[in-house]
Length: 473
Image (cartoon, rainbow, N blue to C red; front, side, top):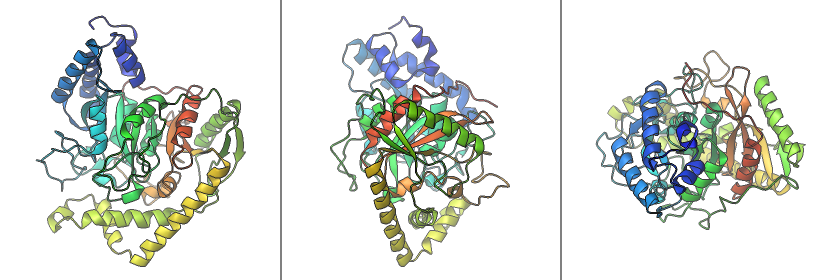
């Protein structure tokens, strides 16, 4: 594997599907790919803080073993040799899982893989490290008391979003080809929108979670990559059952790798640019409108339809704050003093939520879920902007001097679909007036994830290709 093709000389732009094809032809070595990845992490991570832990030695051992298997023509699985990152919130054997919190143990033991990590490892993925998250993943930006501020590679003064902001920054710079994220209120889709990458929050129940999230059934695990095909590949490995997950909803698995149709003829697509109540920046709206034109060109029957619900923010935050309170209950007074003040605030508010209000929020959630299920009896997809605003200053929860006081107020397109547990993806659809990425959200009915992935693959072939191989100051 000493001879390298032209494609292998452009490793900074390589996708996982492409890399596997090169491995198969013995045109690229997993070791060479990892060496390039680690060199760029060393160069760029000090600027963006995408990784809070890098295991270069362990990753190189895994890459060398993968190289030997490929030379023998015996790869161990569908991801053999692909550099992959894991979010700091996810337990990983041999790597610290600090949850972005100074209250966590600095010594471990780190002796257990969460189900998704075990599945990725068994498939041959080369685990390179842990990506940064806000403390316990509590907000839509990425900074924490333990690891500091994560920055957006498109403009280092700005946030990449969160809570999977480290994974988003890493995906944007291709610091690893596959990145595991989690999404309990938008935490995959927000950073994918802000960093010009692709990510999908799959239907709740496809991907096993253990230990269960403090946010319970709001939380979904999924992939974050540079394109939809790589996310489908990663999801085909992640979405396997594990008996430790008591909430697993559909252990049969999906046809993640089914090819996209040649068109969207026969599909009915609902488009809502503002849900009837969201203020969307004009340049973002214009970018999304251009993507909607492509749906027409692909043969879809497109209708302008608001989903018909009022803002479920209060329902969401009731459940969110109640979940945060569970974490607070495990900490002593000294540890509570070490918390991000914003997290401590919402956790304390969660302790004050009455049982009656909590149960009412659960009923409201069920009603919203039923309403969206009825909408998807008529429409294959719902298409919306992913974010109503552009990325803003890093290190703050909300834009300075704006109209927002908490992160859920600037993420109105994300959390409704955590309440309903539907598949939802963010697909880059161009740049706004400031040259920053804009995300298009694709939503389908529960367990109809293949529709999101297929539409995304058709659209991304026609949308502007966003590529960033080094951070911008």
